[in-house]
Image (cartoon, rainbow, N blue to C red; front, side, top):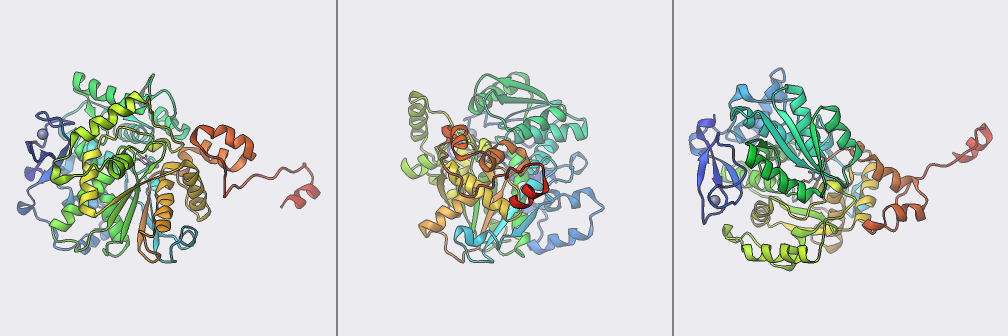
Length: 460
Ligand SMILES: *Cc1c(COP(=O)(O)O)cnc(C)c1O
Ligand SMILES: [Zn+2]
């Protein structure tokens, strides 16, 4: 398949192309981002999305069982023998009738795409299977990533399952949720704790990869994003191939938002969908670079001619003010999102919007998601809090069909959940003061009881 795949710089002022098997994380000519590109006209692409349902009968083939590779004609870069699959992407689109009224939507309007069901517990596995496959095709020996936690868990998981690449993980020394750190260590990843935050770790890992030729597994890697397109294919599948009105996704390094936009650009170009959903990207107010750049500074895709001066000015101001990303939603605690320009392309193509929601709203939304029977981590709930905000603004209509992406599993970050639910309010405020969390609207505190039946019966 890969004879018709190559890499291409996304900046039309450059537009350089590179061989599929070159290991690059940015355009060597201009430093911009790279896409995986295809000569679609020369490829055999199914005439309708419903064609993919044939694969449901072929579940003995591991590629057909994978929620990524059963759509392989839509990410046609892989040499099939090189594919590494561990059952990623067997996730569900769930109709959320209990949650819908809580956030102002009519029953039947809200759907949750629960990516916590992946082998390592987050959506990152969708991208990792694809990048890992490309790394094998390119003959890489070591792979590295910077991570707020889930990328490292995923990389270490794929590496351990295959024994194929040595995983080197860069984390900041501040926050990493315990569930995620424990995974990286348990899966045997070599973990380097850098004295800095995620943005620092991201900068250092790129330098280290450049210096040593290690294969970079962050979402700068265009092949990771190819795998993450499959999340949208499955959402469409879950809706009988009828695009929803809105896709709402948390925004961190903006890999998902970028991948989703690319998926819709390609599906539309291939004639496989007629209507394109609008994409809403949700930041935390504690890490809101995209929101500020787009809504306040007027930054836009502009046909690919992104005004770099706006970005540079913004980052310079951020550095002068000493502003660092700070949110309880650690997976989106990122102030220099590497996929910024691709996310602008997504916003442009999908008539998308960007919003920031405070951490208190994120934790409240997470508790509501929990009560509806799905366990997600804080960053994931930003999508639900963002939907609620866009309902209040009236941009999302009461009966619009909305899909929230729940990016990671509840057990990734048990501390946040336990603090929110179990602490007396003043103690909770103390713990969460630096995130501006003052209340816990949906708190569910354990009730103390003496060790005798009478007290227990009184308590329940
Ligand atoms: C990585 C991650 C995000 C952020 O996704 P981006 O693609 O970097 O924007 C959000 N939620 C969870 C749980 C994650 O692991
Ligand atoms: Zn270029």
